Image (cartoon, rainbow, N blue to C red; front, top):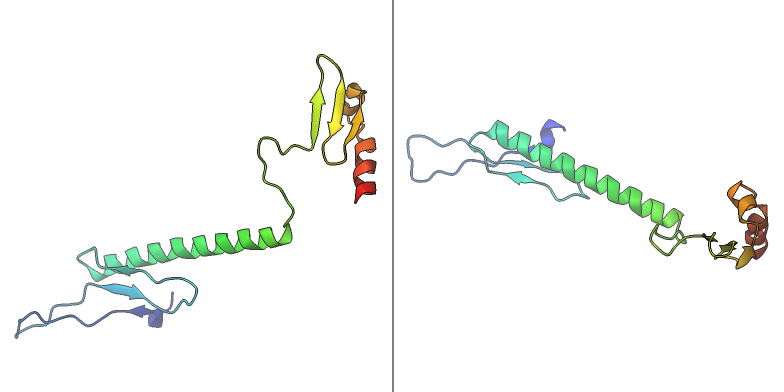
Length: 130
């Protein structure tokens, strides 16, 4: 953080003629995308500055995380959420044997071959569909 991005407002004189109280407020400025924190909780300016910097770091981290999620969503718009009921294949092993691909409606009764890794039939059906 550069020194010119920290703004320290002037202290206010509450009727004290002989001295001017030091400002305890610290505000970080100059970051267009993120709302800047102001800290006035502590009694020292250094603690307020540290608090404001901690808040700013958290906001910057959150901002970049949201941008990454937005970019990922734009890159993969048709990707479904991983939830119950959004599976690709269903396997029935009892009372009968069947594996069904829900995207292509392809079915096979040779469940042992599919469980052993022979899913070429489902891959071909998916590629032919798209």
